[in-house]
Length: 252
Ligand SMILES: C[S@@+](CC[C@H](N)C(=O)[O-])C[C@H]1O[C@@H](n2cnc3c(N)ncnc32)[C@H](O)[C@@H]1O
Image 1 (tube, rainbow, N blue to C red):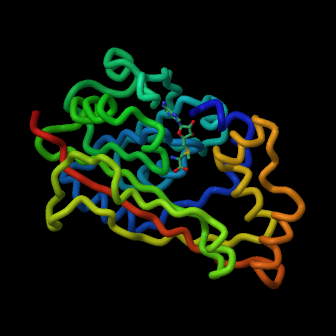
Image 2: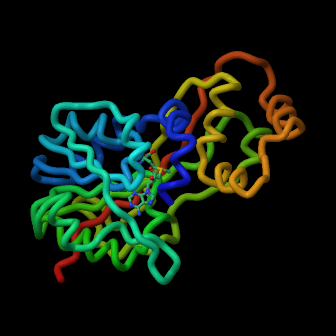
């Protein structure tokens, strides 16, 4: 939900990881043409930085204007604020077909649709119809990935939840060279000190939701537990396990 990212958009842009080059090379190797990408729910442009080096043009959309304010401007990336409404599910519709055509691109024109760490927000049946409409036939590709909390050490990792898109509805065919749609695993590494780690936690929508409801999840004792589990102070290289689902456009 886009408004959850209003208050911590700065934290988000500072604390979230960039994705590994291997992830983008794998995805780009599956699209025969490298003209146009749509990065949906782009946040502050975490994926476009790399996509822009592999594709001629990127349209990067998000429902939060605040998130887009923190995105790095690049000559071949067009950032676009898009509307969102609640569906019956309740999940979010990204926009109407008319808005899609007007704000993103016309039918059958996009080589690749990417959704990084955001698929869980969407009403998937509506969203997938839009993806199929906008992708080129027959070679258009959808790629979506998520990551779980950074791996610091066994003690800290045990305090976090896990998610890996194994069971998410993903009605697309395998891309060339593989016989399933994933999850394929990659690793993003970043250097964090303890404050960076806390900033990462504060950038999560679950943290913000609790805070909006008067519950501070990072109380003194919780911070102390993380500190003890983490061990010595200073910077640490932490790993985010990235899980990719990738598939071909459907014919219909
Ligand atoms: C966890 S962030 C992911 C941001 C970025 N893709 C990344 O890799 O870090 C989720 C993003 O989804 C956006 N979002 C949520 N609902 C949306 C909707 N219905 N339409 C477009 N963007 C939406 C939020 O504003 C937020 O920036």
